[in-house]
Image (spheres, rainbow, N blue to C red):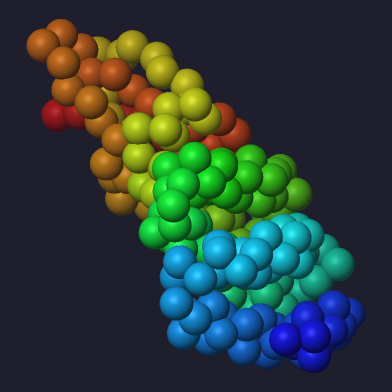
Length: 186
């Protein structure tokens, strides 16, 4: 374990990406409840969270995605393992909230004109909101509209349209105004 942790601190993005894939394999093969019980979950979280800001311009887009993809997969796996532990809802939702606040939403302003990284972050945003379920309302802004749905520019509906007898309620995620549009439903 100490060797893996030492390699993860390497400044070379190629070495870091390879060591993250090794860590990902370790996390996925380790029994879920044991990660939380042994305290490895907290150690990995402390190690992975600073890597969430491995964004362009210091890194190229390819290097950034090579680092971010395994980091997010590891963090979502750690959140799932916390869901299987004795205190499932609180710890898992706290971690997903940290991923959302300190990773995804903090990264959107920094990536600006990097469409591949923005698209990647959007898919992680959907994953985090789905993992949080109703608890994602804490990070969402509700606005009434007439017959509206939340649709991403790429045309994929993220599925958070709540139907009521009157108008739909539109859930707008903070900081997504630049990347998504509100379209009128037919």
